[in-house]
Structure formats: structure tokens, C-alpha cells
Length: 312
Image (tube, rainbow, N blue to C red; front, side, top):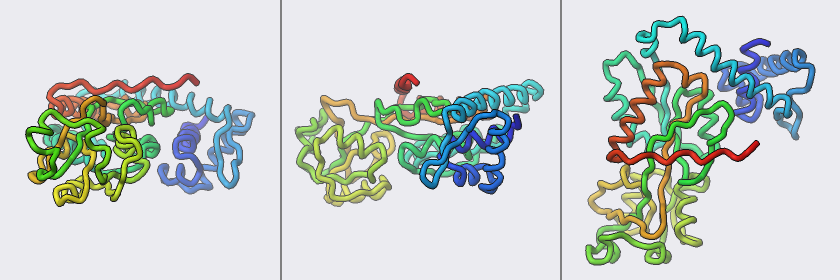
């Protein structure tokens, strides 16, 4: 079987269709379809099926795509076997992060790797939960976040999850708010204390929105803004409370962050890497630096481990 055809099959699985697979592979949709047709002839069984105007993999196609994951890993290990290990730990690594994660981790990562021979090309990709794993088809390391306990991309075919850190989510209120007084807010607040607040939340589909609903039953959301810098300014001006990450947003002079009591509220930050990409020494070096940097940011606190994937 042709390795390029197997790669096309994996991309159709992760991207959910021929057109998006073609985009990440830098091919035309016709070329991807030809690869699938070639694999189908070789396999002797249908690998895809029509669903409306789209295409999805059959059980046989999914099984072959899973086997193709192992082929890709084996090929990368074979390449590594003939490279000098010291030289292999240099080169280009493309890293993305969601916006606040980029602010928290990317400057430190670039500083740590400056002059090391590792060239890190960074970008920000703030997408809904389900869209993080597909980013690994075009990026080497994807820094993603999920609500605590949410499996999200855990178990995504062909993707390895490297836990980086757990970031607590605190209630942000203006410094003039009654809850911000030392006598009332020094130890933190309970969900009951903030149940009637007007909330500034992120857009639906993003992790912090799900955590807010878990903390406050039917929260009164008056604004939805994903940029935490804007949210901090809105809170400081008295336009609502917000649930914000502690390490990223704890330095605004007009905002007080109050820990939540009686409930565990946080987000988990992970690095997502395709299985064969994780075999590259230069990528392993970047992941090692990210892991060390995360420990530094959290003061050594261990990240949450991913919840197990459900049985297949």
C-alpha cells in the first residue's frame, strides 16, 4: 500500500472529509479521492461511504486508518535510526496555542530554546474543543485546553496527549466589589455567593463557558468575549464578574481574583502531538521544555492526567 495514500486516509478521518483533508495535505480534493480509490482497490472492501453530501470512513476504513497510524510511527522511527541523535534534536518545530495559553507559555518556550538549534515557529489557534485535535495534521505541537474532567480529544485516533498543567479558574470582580473586601473575600467565595452576578463569559463551545455552567446554575451572561484582556477591562469597569484563569489573569490592578470554595473549578492545558511526530527528537525536546516550563509556572504542581478513553 502506498504511504501517501495511507496518509490521505488518516487525514480524511481526522478532518472529517475530503476537502478539509486536501487542505492540510496541500493536495487537490481530486488527488485525495484518487488515493482513497487506490486504497479501496488494494483492500478489496469499501473504505468510505457517502453520508448526505459528505464522506466518512467505513469500519474497514477506520481499521486501516488505525493501522496506518502504526505505519507512520514505524517510518519515523526508521528515519530516526539512521540520523545522528545529537543533530536530530535540532530543526524546525511548529507550535500553536490558544490565545491565553500562548501568552502564558510561548514567550518562555522561545526563551528556553534560544540558541539551541531548535527553531520554533509559533502561532495562536483559539478554536472550540473538538477542533484542537485536527490541528495536529498541520502543526507539530498543539497546546490546547479543556474543562477539568472533560475527555475532549483524549482517545483521538493517532494523537498523543501530554498533560502540561492545571490552571485554577477564579471569580474575577472589580476591586470596589463588596466581595473583594479583605473581610469577605480573603478566603474565597462559594458558588452561592456569586450566583446572582452578571457574568462576562467566553463564547459557547469554549472550555471556560462549560465550567461556568458547572459552577453556577443558569448563570446570567450579559456579554461573551474570548479575549481575556478585554474581559479584565470590562470587569475592572464594573460591567460584570467573570471566571478567569489564575496564572494568566492575576495581575490587573483593577480586578481581584477570588478562589472558589467548595467546588473544583479549573482548566487542563495539554500538548497534542501526532504519534509519529512525537517520535522526532526535536519535538521531544520541545515537549520536554514545555513540561519544565509548566512546572515553573505552577510552582511544581502536577498536571491532571487525561481521563481514560471510553471502551471501543
